[in-house]
Length: 256
Image (cartoon, rainbow, N blue to C red; front, top):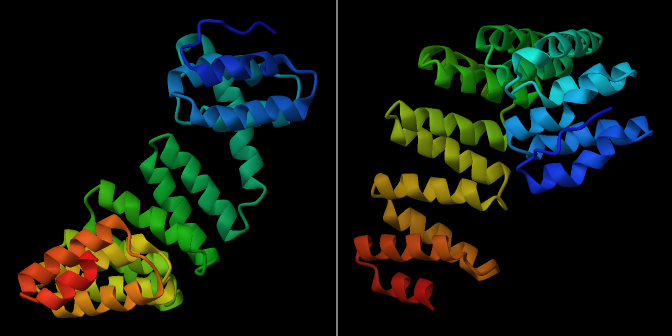
């Protein structure tokens, strides 16, 4: 099995000797590890695995190359291996998560119509798997269909009311629609359900800042400061809010 040595990526060069390993699990692991490599170099690295003697290795290679450019010389081998990957995924299509995995595969291929249908089916099978909602609404964001996104966000918060990731994603959607007040409510819930996630808190504070609700934001920060040191970005945001609110005491407490 010949492997090209014209590989610009250091990681690709490190992985190259293992492409021809006698151990199938190692060849599969190479495909998985190659996902961290730039797509063109990845395709060059694991192309030989598309015609491996074992289906599991071929399927792993096809999965790794789903979002990578495949030239004409490799297209036939890739298409055969990719068809095997689709067939393997279909075995778990009775589960919502299985359908969601199919949707993710189509997203990586840029096949958004197919991905949309897989996610809708996944939600109908298992309405409590949050990734299906997140990825489906991301498709609607990319294709500029905010009404459809709104429909599925409303369904998501009904089925998964305490899911912080969905609340956060819904808040971002509302921000894009210019509904800042409603977005703040979603960000507040995201913090309530995942209080240790600083990103959720930071975005909620930014939203409060845009609504000029500086006193509420400062109260949150000062309470947090009592239990743990503030990160640099939270500290700076708090000081900015204190200045806008004319709250010298809060400014000094946050500064020091």
